[in-house]
Amino acid sequence: MIQLPKYLPPLLDGLWLTLEITAAGLFIGALLGMLLALLKASRSLALRLPANIFIDFFRTTPFLIQVLWIYFVLPYLIGRDIEATAAGILALGLNASAFMAEIFRTGIAAVGPGQRDAGRMLGLSRAQIFRYVVLPQAVRITLPAMIATAIQVLKSTSYLAAIGVLELTYRATIVTQNSGRYLEVFSVAGAIYIVVIVALILLLELVEKHLARGRASLA
Amino acid sequence: MTWDELAVQLPKLWDGVLITLLLAGASFLLGAILGVPLSLARISSRRWLVGAAGGFIALVMATPVVIMLLWLYYGLPILTGVLLPDLLVLILVLTLNQMVIMAENYRSGLRAVPSGQRDGAIMLGLSRWQALRHVVLPQMLRAVVPLLASSSIVLVKDSAIATFIGTNDLLNAARSAAIATFRPLELLSIAALLYFMLTYPIALLAARLEYGMARLQKPRLR
Image 1: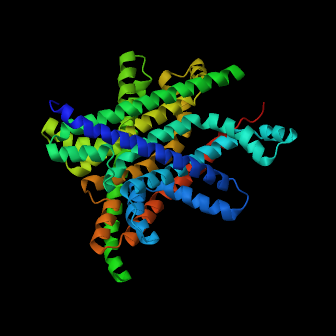
Image 2: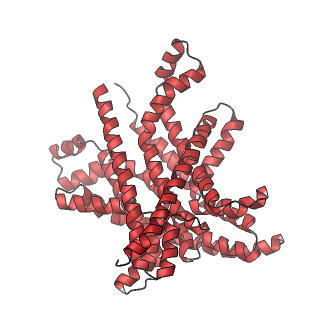
């Protein structure tokens, strides 16, 4: 612990990258997840089936194998190398999208059919109903699940140490190898994760409480 | 490389499947058992016990499994002076996560049982234990069983952390075979398919159970 000032800076650099790739992964995950949710809700089997296979596959296989597959196998298929950080962000985004698609789907389903009917009554188009009636309510309903997914994505970033992305966990392993101080460095790295994630968990509880209050006043 | 050479690697993957199943299975059982006292502590009337259990659950939930593994595998022996075998450390990490998830599952299961059910049973002359055993527990389990299925998928997936400390689970077996044969495409894809074959039936079961649950809980008449 005496050497804390010496190995804290590289760990904080790692935390910064961890947060960046978490944000990037969530962004890709949200966009792709919305697309998947729409495909899944489609009437055509040709659209529904690939979306279902994609979602099931990413939800039921370990994140680490997805990371290794994207980093080591995808370059064979596309004929060019992928940089580790980019591969990591892509893996996070694809993985998160599968989980977000389910969240969006349940969120959209939770908006009652009466809302849609009312929108149609008012002369809105299907796209307008989705954009102005269903989506705002669905986002509200799914917000807690989205924050939970953000926590999950943040925790998943530590797997990217396996392909050498310089996020917090990999930084920590480098520092331990240079200093031999396994206990101290992994403890500090763990503490950093815990602080950030506990903050997110508290935010989640706050949002849940806030939404529950809104619901109670409606009843 | 021919398909024959690939076939040579398959038994190694099979050994990996067994290790993965051992890790997930052992942690599933231990987590389901240890989750009971943890969830009881969480709903206890002693405030310090509730706080301690809540703190423990938050601590485990807020720690990524990889860093937990690295800490327990490389850090803890320095603290205790005892070097645990890698399989044991892996089961410890997975069990810690599973018992916390199970404790929360049990708690949400209990919450699904209206308190009037217990009060009614006690009113009818059942003892507290009988009310728990015959009225509360069956209803609670009905809510918990679908969650069991989904948390066992998480376990199979999380067991892939074994790769970080070089234990030959399914993923690491595939990885070393891929390195030995320079064939990551085939071997990682086969391993992914094997994982899918392990977890997808559980996912289908979970969806079925959830659907069944939803039907059971549907209000009949107003």
